[in-house]
Image (cartoon, rainbow over all chains, first blue to last red; front, side, top):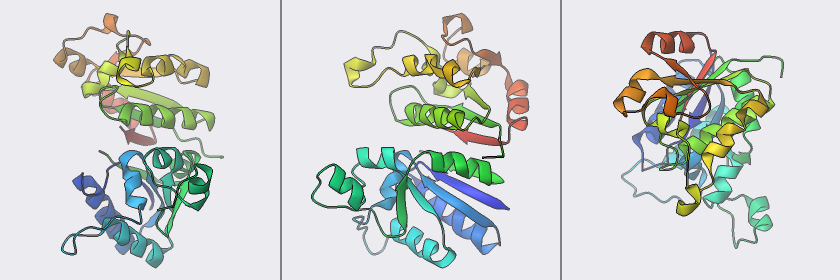
Length: 130
Length: 121
């Protein structure tokens, strides 16, 4: 079955951020397709390359990156939610004259149209809320 | 986009404490632009989104009620509100703006069943 996932929860604030990752990993391990992961609201912090959790805690952004690399996942971070919260790629950092960008490799900034497309293309859309 | 999924968006948060209400509205408008049939259900603290008279500027926010009023322009006119949530919060349907249909738990079950996708904010 083809799934898409919406992550609204910020890593390390909400357990559902970790649960979303485990859910994604499990559905891929059990042979389902993951069409897209859409990070929205505080969930955009998952795309920050600057996240530096203690070594004895899960590195949620890095876990997503590794999963995306293994399964060629589409990790989309909502651009409107992200730039408000200071998660910027090189293009947006240039647009807003910021000193650096922090969107982690494997993630891309894009609009809500990507969520509408995910809804249209997927058999199931699962929300991990905040 | 060939496949027009029927989308039910359940709003469960008060209008301003978190970004959920605004995030939800942005998704509804985007899906509306893609001509997907949208229904909105307001439940739990989300029923407060339907009260009028917001003074959102006082807390540095944009007025959510004005945006809800614009929904019919995007052909989003299927608004529902959970009856037991209204009762829990001491609200009556005649206090609400935007003309939602009051639904009980059975009607909510049918609402969920009759949509292809359910999103929760």
